[in-house]
Length: 136
Image (cartoon, rainbow, N blue to C red; front, side, top):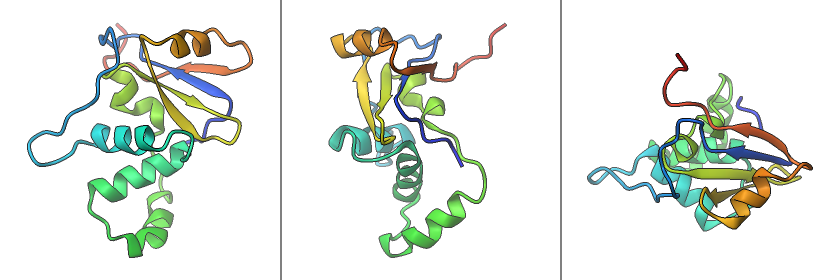
């Protein structure tokens, strides 16, 4: 199971090239995983944990009927799942994520005052989204 972060700010990846946050777009008729994650968090900041987002994105992306979500969530977390550090939101699109004391998450645009404030906040744990390319 991917970790739920508490009192943590996940900054964009070191190799993120976005100078400002971008809203991810669907490819054709199909929403990408990044679009689904973005919509879940942007429409309800501080409502879901990172684990909630991981599962809900999986369920929505794969058109799993809501009636099966409880059963499917248990199966989903039987094996390790990536956390928001692996999301394209922080790797490619310029979105940091702030995880509050309850582990609930909100998006923070790289160019915003909130991003700078959270990045400098010593009361938070700090980590970065995973790099897109291997260091080398």
